[in-house]
Image (cartoon, rainbow, N blue to C red):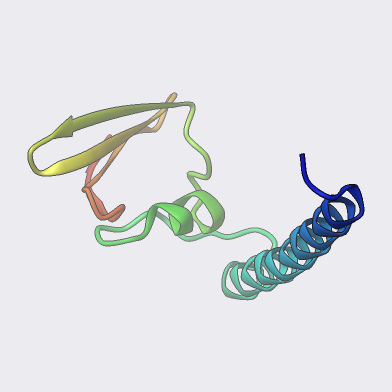
Length: 103
């Protein structure tokens, strides 16, 4: 419906913008992962603690990623429970911070 040459150029511009965005985000994520590795080391011996961020628990703690995640939404926001076989359950508040550990 429009000028085909214009549409091709517009699509090429969108592809360049998407590519530039992907490169920026990839670099940002690589830096973030590098910072986590510097903070945690290859293998961490740190236990989860009250107030820890969910990302930190997953990346840096000895508990790592949960076996199951349960999500509850209420007026106070979204809460998550991370269930670990043979370890216990971690409860995260609506801000993503660990607020209770059940063993």
